[in-house]
Image (tube, rainbow, N blue to C red; front, side, top):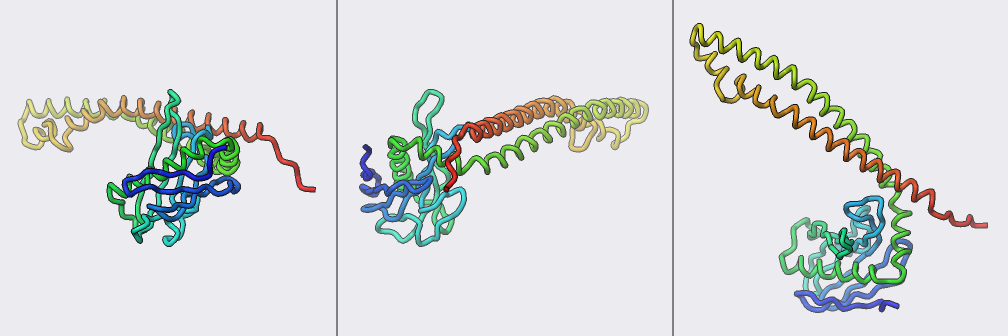
Length: 265
């Protein structure tokens, strides 16, 4: 059984973190020695796979950082300081199963970034608490609790995201189709202006043909790359829509597979 307490070495000195009993979807660590306050640890999704609940998120303060913010007086701080800090860290494994950590912005209660030393202390404490939970025997229960908590919100976001990216793809494809006749019209106008210039040189016509802002030459050059760009961008948007829809489908399947608890008698 993993000990409920750990000592984390930091640039400000050792920090003692003691885990309380798991409460619903979170474990709260009380901090001592070089830091005071608490760290709130929950399960979460992999940063690159929002349908996979395989990561651990550690937050400064006794809150879920994605929902609420702790009062300033409750934010963790260095033992010899009065400034509280908020932020979070996600611990996950990469494609080769190596542990990686992603730190979300750390800042003071007044939204000022911490010093380099303080940031190193906060990051070390967050990572230490996250690694502790990742090694606990009840990690599957922590991750399952996060799944039950987050799936409804994720489904709303992914459904919106799939529709948004699909609409963007349609818009970009429309732009690509419109660029071709616009380019042909611009090229025809350029040839006409070139004929005018040959017959009767004029500064205005010369500006229309010159490589300068708002000229026909610049407009045609822009339209030459605009259509291929829109085609490529539309393909990327369709891929984003496909991925969001696939992740939403995966989450719905997880909801259906999840065993339902008994109703209270």
